[in-house]
Image (cartoon, rainbow, N blue to C red):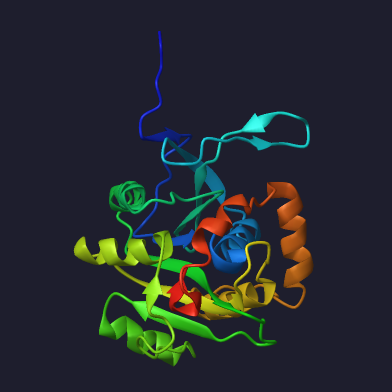
Length: 253
């Protein structure tokens, strides 16, 4: 039998029983802040992978592994219990606007299937230099959540700093609000260069999430721990260039 990949192919390993979980997205973007943050949470919470997404909208390439085997670009879904969270993390996201809509639609199908109560997206704000204590900016689907973000020390200054949020980090919030799913985005200052890893920015985001999700783990040695996670998971940064050079720090993701 001949099998053909659909535009979006979801391979389900298991179907966890979750109660009104939150969904946290961390895909490659400026400073790789989202990917770093979510990889850290997945590792700390010992989250389990239950679904993988492949897509024709991803680049026509494969990643070479250390053992000379190859891997298609993919998006993975993990879950944790207590608290119930679905993590969306992966190698890539589509570059074209049309494919980005379809991609986010597919993620939201998963969110609706598991009755996700809230979506949190994570991204970076590209600067020429990285501050020692990166400020975390916020955006949300409603004013009540903006008020909540401010109470957590997140800076919400309208369009003064964040004019646009590109890619899944922004699209997930916009399209989720149409489906009556609330959510917010945490955007930390980092260096806007394709090869830069925003460790400090990720730490600032994780500080916020630690309080919001009532988690308890040390962040003192986060850079060392994240580098260890990178070795295990081989974070890929090849597609970050598609998110750069579109108008400076008013383009965020």
